[in-house]
Image: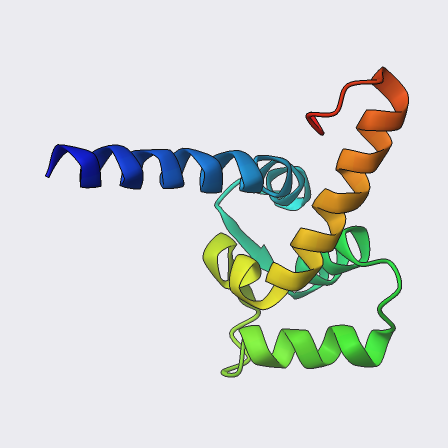
Amino acid sequence: ADLVKILLDFQLRGHDRFLMRFRELFQSIDSDGDGVLEEQEFKSLVRRVSPARDEEEIDELLLQVDPGHTMRVTFSDSVTVLSPDIVDMMIVVARTVTQTDGSDDGW
């Protein structure tokens, strides 16, 4: 049981560290700080995470994350729909940091 707890804690810390930059970006875009993005804020988030996406792709993502057209997107919803883009963003960030500071830890 202790080994399982240690492994789960390790996995959670890694997940938390991985999402740290995305969480910071999400919070910077969340203008009222309520933890929920409105439609235009979500579109802004997508443009920042994945600049190559066009408006049609962004609208498709919005439909996936908000099929009921509530115009409200949570952090968890954003992570779910943008996971591949977040991974790509983190690879770019890690490469940039490595080139900038000479370390190989990506942070």
